[in-house]
Amino acid sequence: MRGLSDRQRTILEYIHERQQSDGVTPSYREIGDAMGIRSTNGVSDHVKALLRKGYLERIGAAGKGALARAVVLTPLALTDLGVAEQDPGFEDFGDGDIVEIGVYGQVAAGMPALAEEHREETLRVDSCMIPGGGRVFALRIFGESMINDGIMPGDYIFVQKSLAVRDGDIAVVMVDGESTVKRFFREGDQIRLQPANDTMQPIYVHSREFREVNIVGVVVGVYRRMQ
Image (cartoon, rainbow, N blue to C red):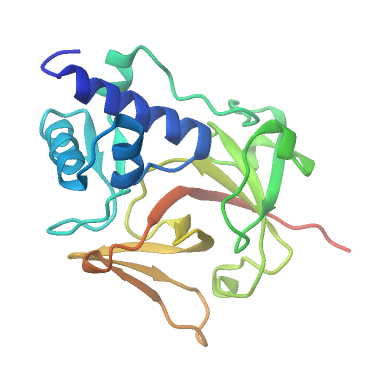
């Protein structure tokens, strides 16, 4: 790969492998253990080089002490690795289709298991319910944190797999291993996860806390069964 050392390429391949298999970016310590690098500072130096050379980019909070897991491979990296972003069990479709969307559990119950064998049920919907199409899966809503946005307990949300999110998007986010659906905002060196419920307070994740934050995807639709 252009301008990369063998070690940097190996780290990039490992990050991609973990993001595809587990849906999360490995921590510096996990990268070090896999690569035989004893110092997390050594891993940090390689990650900074990959960021500087355009093979990784940060998501979420920025600045000194930014979240170790908050990186994603760039299109340049995917091209040079010769891989495409593929996720088992996701539907990829265009306009005007009746599609089957797999349901893989519920929000607020840990990391969704997105492999095909973990599909709990299937929803058949018109693709017009899912703007933009792409790789989409479904989760059930648990709790009332988003009721002001019309997302009720027991609803299904359609989630477009993505490691990047824009400010104000409704996203499924992992914080210290637990999933939540909130509106996502970057505010300086912190992230605000804002509920849509007047009785609930936002979740703040400051970069200095070194909490594990991973974006699972962006909510692109809601489905409700009427009893």
